[in-house]
Image 1 (tube, helix red, strand yellow):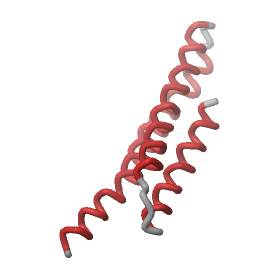
Image 2 (image 1 turned 180 degrees about the horizontal axis):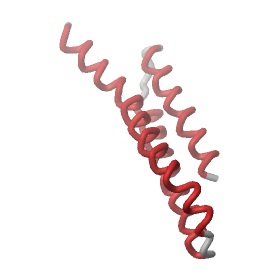
Image 3 (image 1 turned 135 degrees about the vertical axis):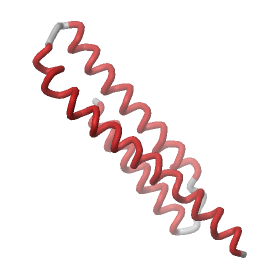
Image 4 (image 1 turned 120 degrees about the horizontal axis):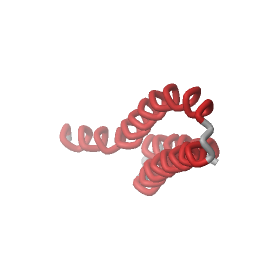
Length: 96
């Protein structure tokens, strides 16, 4: 489930950037990209919680250390990409 939500988050982020480049209102796509990023993190947390409940320590030991780094990195990238249009728009408006 978290993979599907993550793919939607990536898609919404690219739609956000595309809408900004084409001059359309990008704010809804930006909100969707950030929201689906948060939902991806919640879904991943739910997956890990399920492993804890069934005491699947092998899965936790194998997956959690590498996923933690990946989730931090991808979340930071998602935030930066989704807010990039705001900074570019502010820069464009201040130079006029």
